Length: 244
Length: 57
Length: 226
Image 1 (cartoon, rainbow over the protein chains, first blue to last red):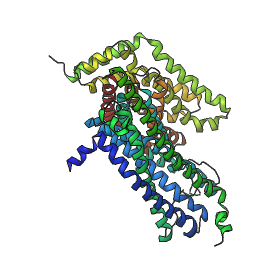
Image 2 (tube, each protein chain N blue to C red; image 1 turned 30 degrees about the vertical axis):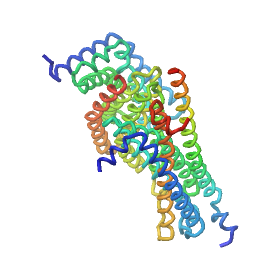
Image 3 (cartoon, one colour; image 1 turned 120 degrees about the horizontal axis):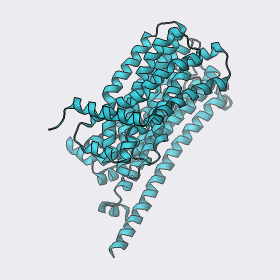
Image 4 (spheres, rainbow over the protein chains, first blue to last red; image 1 turned 180 degrees about the horizontal axis):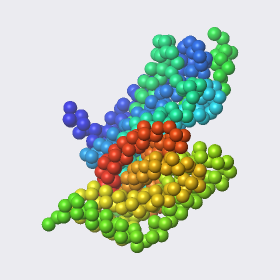
């Protein structure tokens, strides 16, 4: 079991494995997302309360989930890089950050557009959207910190520390926002919530969630190769890997 | 269900379709940006070798 | 013979306080900033007294947050500039203790000073006197927590040339729960309802941060100074 872990800390191994995995992940993602979109848009029955607007959940929920998942991955990978000084950990963290940030943005935009027909306004400081907004700030902070250092190693380590601190804070932030929101929102505001979910509505959602996860894996593989190349530029194996 | 009512999305078309379009754009951007990163990294690595070879010669 | 943790703490604390008092403008400027920012809100919003009272907790807290951020920059910077920080990191004394001492000193000089000025500001914002105790407590706990959080940010950005904006960018999202609980407590005190729940939450946050943040800040210093 530990051999597998040790292999993951070897840059050439990661480089090759990422290349091998990527097509499968991307293909799987395409299939799952295609099914999810078609079934969710065309065949799932409309919600009796929200009508066809609820279909936004098929892109909003996976985006929000991915934004959190990518942050956790970034923090854990960065932590591994920090504690055990495994450079591949930092590579994974650096690769994950822009992906996660883009999905946070997607969650915010889709959440806002979903809110307009539901609440009558594009932004109502709903606790989930507010938490997503703060998550976006956390992402930006980590990415900005990494790029602020001339020495990429220092940048990696500082960003990893910040990501770990942020991860500890995410549940606190979410809790505090929910608490704050409960003070100010009346019962009249409908939650950006899950409608009643019979199977015909649920399956496309699960497919989309699964598909987005696979997509994240695929893009991570591509980005990871770039990050590995950037960090291992001086090594001999890179020369063979690129060809001349 | 005819195609007209599908595109209308029960009146919510102007919210649903932009959502899907935006997320599609995010997916596309992710792929494009990732390929860009790898491409630029390869160029930089090749340049580093060219310079190292030049220094050694 | 290595001095113990307690001695180190007191020595560093004393040094920081002495340095702080030798540069009074570093103490006064953030305070003035605090006063100015609290003036900006009523001027910008031109509200009557009742509305002012409603926004008072938020205004007070945002102003306290921003002015604390200003003084955070100097937490490690001046020591980093003249090489003292490297000596401290290398000294082999637990960096944890040194960070605790520096942060405490920073709070005594900035956050506590804010507390002293807060009645003035509270009166200007039409906060009733009955709410003052809760306001004091919440500001005290809040600025203390903010000093700890800020120490992490300061440690991460100390070696950067123009790190002050990045410092704010890093610290502010982490400080949002603070703002929510602190302003919430003051809000409830003004409304006359029980603010104890919010104060407990704020206190819990403070304890959590006080214990964990010095580890993170010490680690940050090691990362950026190695």
